Amino acid sequence: MAIRYGCFFSYAHGRHALMQRFKSALADALRCYLEPYFDTEDELFIDTEQLGGGDDLDRKIARAMCESVCMILIYTPKYEAHAYTRREYEAMRLIEAERGKWYTLPSRLIIPVVMTRHPASLPPQISDARFYVDFSHYTMATADIMSNPDFLPDIDKMVKRIAAHYACQKKHTPLDHDCNQFVLPAVPPEWRDVPDLTFPKE
Image (tube, rainbow, N blue to C red):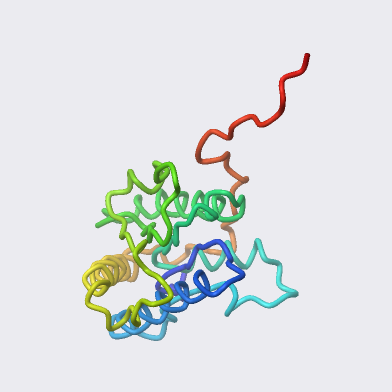
């Protein structure tokens, strides 16, 4: 296995400016601060930038996840509502379990970034994580993340976690590990109970 990406970006696609701008601003900041740590690898894998319309998406996504050091999970309520993003979360958990056999993990491979909180509460997949960052105060009026002192301390923590895993994986990944063999898992269940909205039958 060769490392090709620093982070796999897992997020629910947005149609409007806020979600699109947040994803781009976070990506630009991470690229900026991760670059000094890497050799020839790309800092990020973002599906809208690296995948074409004719690609075998499941196979390409699975390989990209396997070839990524960590996963950045941009949490919004929309994220947990979509099967494909929950599936990416489960896939990275499988990768984390495998890599935990190669070296002692300095931290989790999944780094949640909260863009928008759920009206009820964060799901345990996020709230129970040992580390997540809360960027829910981001708005369209927010200054650029990569130079914003309100965000830089958390960006620095994220970058250092990714860099630590990068060093470990460069040292401990088996030479014969083949990312072409990794496949996405089945779609996992909902992250929280879905209320039954059907009317009672008489």
